[in-house]
Length: 253
Image (cartoon, rainbow, N blue to C red):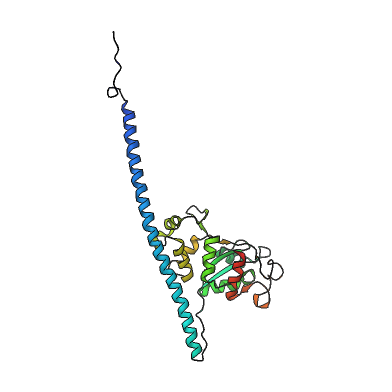
């Protein structure tokens, strides 16, 4: 009895294997389509981010030009130009947990200042000013400028994931996933919302993890120990140091 080798078309293929091949092919096609869509979305997002960043730069420059113009007009008229009161503060904790009053400890917890050299952005209002008076011996603060906010977020910025984990800002997609419903999709959006204290400042500020800064480097005081119990106007470290806070942050970033 002779035996004939079956051709390729005559080879029996199990039905389960055929189903598996079809499922794999379908999954691969869907995955390829998804990757193409994601690539297109990222390309479109880059265009949007670029336009937003350009618009923000123009807005910041216009604000600076307006300030210069108003100062010149006041000088020409023989008056003094008084800038508006700051609406944003950056608060840094400079003292530890030893002999802390329960009320002070509670306010520090509300500000998320749990460790020395922790820093947070704070919106200026009546409630926050009253709380700052309570914790003033334990913190130093002042209004940050645009450069300071930008360096803090780019160099020391971390976010709080939905699971409560501390993650570095490595991709704009992380911001879009958490704050996209507010129209905030990139780092420049976060910076703009903080600097201008926008409508979604609370959500953006809570999204940012408290900044962990280093000890002052190149500052007039090598550490907080010698004068941290005195107010800044008395030669110490604590309390409101106004725009000098920017020099301090630069030495701690």
